[in-house]
Each structure stands twice: as C-alpha cells, then as structure tokens.
Amino acid sequence: MGTHALDGDLAELAVSARAALVRDIDASGAWAADPVWREAFESVPRHLFVPYYYVAVPGGHERRWGESPGPRARERWLRGVYADTPLATRLRDGELVSSSSQPSLMAMMLTELRVRDGDRVLEIGAGTGYNAALLAHRLGDDGLVTTVDLEPEITEAARGHLAAAGYHPVVVTGDGARGVPERAPFDRIIATCTLPSVPPAWLAQCRPGTRILAPLATGLITLTVREAGTCGPSGNDGHAEGRFLPTPAYFVPLRGADRHEESAVELDGVPRRARESELFRFLLALSHGSLDPREALELWEREGQPPRERYGITVAGEREWAWLDDPEGPYTWPLR
Figure 1 (cartoon, helix red, strand yellow):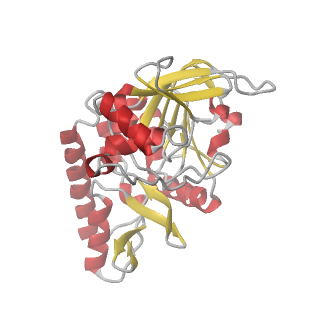
Figure 2: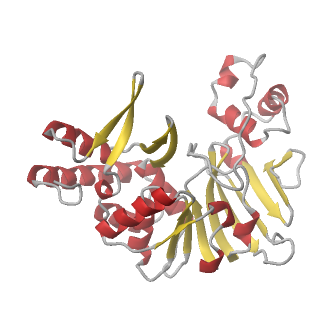
Figure 3: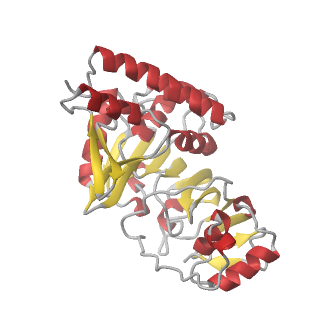
C-alpha cells in the first residue's frame, strides 16, 4: 500500500479526519474574511504531502510513516497528518530543516495574503508542497503559483507530492532570499520561513500594490509595496511598509544568502513575568542588536506592553527598519 492509494479503512478515515480538520479551522475563524479557502482545505489531501513525519520522544524522534507495516501505526500516522498541528518533515543531524505548518495558521496566512483571481504568487519555502497546492487550487494551474526552496531534495519531494495530488505550480530550486526573477513580476509574496529582514531582491520582483506576508521576529509582517524596486546598480530602491499581525508565529529560519545566526540573549535582571511574555520576547527579537534586554524592558513597560500590531516595518531604498507606532517616531530599530 502506498500513501497515494490508501486502503479502504484508511481512505474513509482520511475523508472524515480532513472534514474534522476543516471544521476546526472554520471554528477558529481563520478564513472568515475569505471563506473561499475552506473549499481548498476540503479538497487538497494533506496526507499526500506528508508521507512521513517526526514526533519528539524522550531521547530523540520517532518517525510516523504511511507505509508502516502495522495498521495501528498507519492509523496513528494518518490521524497526526490531519491534526491541527505543525509536523516536522525533515531533520538533519537532529535539527529541523523543513516542516508542514499548522493548518489553521496556514489558513490565516493565506487569508491575510488577500489573493485575487489572476494574481501571480511567489511562495518562499516549498516545504512539502501542501501550501503551494492550496494556492494552486485557488488560482488554477496556469503558471500563477511559483514556489522556491534552497534544498534540491525538498523541491524534488514537493514536485512529487504536488503531481500525486494533481497540482502543477512552478517549483524552483534556488535561494528564496533572491526571489525568482525569471517568474516576476509578482502580485503576492508569502514566506513560510522566518526572515532576519525583508530581502531587497523581492521588491524588484513586485508590482506597486503587491502584498508581502512573512514571518519575522516571532511575528507575521504584512507589507504593501508602494514603489517596486528596480534591477539597477543597487537593485534596492523600492518602498514597502506595513504592520505585524497580532498572531505569534514560529517557523524554520530562512536558509541561504540572508541567513544569519542569532546569538543568545542574556536575560539576567529581567523579571520572570517579562521573560515568560511572548510580547516581550517579540520586542527583544525585533530590536536585537539595538536594545539590550533592560532597555527593552523599560520601553515595554513604559508603552503598556504593546501588542504585535503596534509594530511595523518600513523598507525604503537601502534602509530597512522596524518601529513602534510610527515609522518616523522615537522608537525605531534598523534591520539591515
């Protein structure tokens, strides 16, 4: 038995489990602003994209596989596939390098992308191909959806999963930080990996009005491109600006030219309530290198523990900075 042709009992379980997942996402309100996404999640079988995944167990990871010899093991695999949880799909030396995101978070991000019929969409981080399949289901197979990943084994697997599910977006092996210029211009860019900053190359591949949605500093930034960049000497004269969504988000880091390793932050002297606050840790990540933890704490308390949506990012030519409340206000931090 292959995961592309489930046997009778598993096939029935897949249908009911997918329906239950859709009900859970519906109840979360994730696609309330664009219910068309419900039909995509109803139609695209996630199990075709996750033939196996890894679950943390004491001392390491256990692989759950759709072709395990025991029927109970296969059922456990399938139930996990349709749970509203992220799934670790690729490990290297014990480090997570690729995953399938939590479906309700995917639904919320796709809704926030505000896709319109005919939009050309670039996805940074192909992963299993599941997100690209959802986009292709919505937009069709007319070459409107492009997905890129640095790892050839990831793109090869994604192509196979997509073909098995009957979708054919363009899958490119390359550095997502450089975009995919040969497929530009794009009307929407969505990243499924955490960025240290917005790559300058992206703006050169956008139209004015393009919406960019990407994980950054444990949050999700939404940017609107006001002026697209050009491919001139600097390649970086565009302008984009936007705010963070209220939702926390944790993704695998971007791999490639723009990747950098974050050094650990010492939190000595920071009270426990701040150390354990997602909002304080978000500010620390966003202002990393500009504020030390005690300065961040003073600002955080003085400003009433601001939620994520009070923060934003501006990209203007060679400059890129994060800010609280106002791009030209007193609280700004350079991102590159």
